[in-house]
Amino acid sequence: MKAKTKGEKLRSGKVKLSRTKPQIVLKDGQPNAVILDINEYQEMLERLEDKEDIKMLQKMRQKPLKFRKLDEFLAEHAPDV
Image (cartoon, rainbow, N blue to C red; front, top):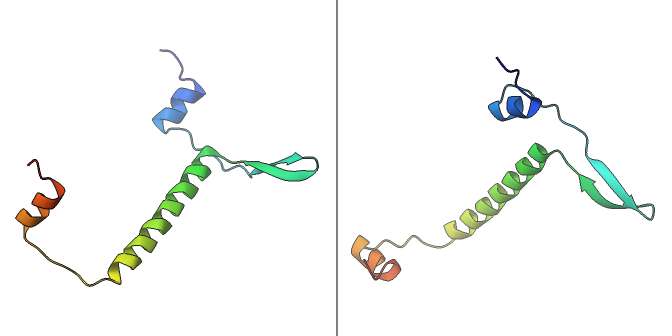
């Protein structure tokens, strides 16, 4: 039986990744970019998306609810149906 490579173990979820500290890239002695662990980056994107969703939900809740019949909704949003 062939031993699994590290990549195969990562894809199967059998290897636990440790977090690495962000690496700061300098240009002319000044911070210019940051290198992040891909999982940390994806989590940051998810948190940002969640924050945007909450902001949109709060804005929607400020307006009064408006109910209408399903047929009216479908006629407006799917006129070909």
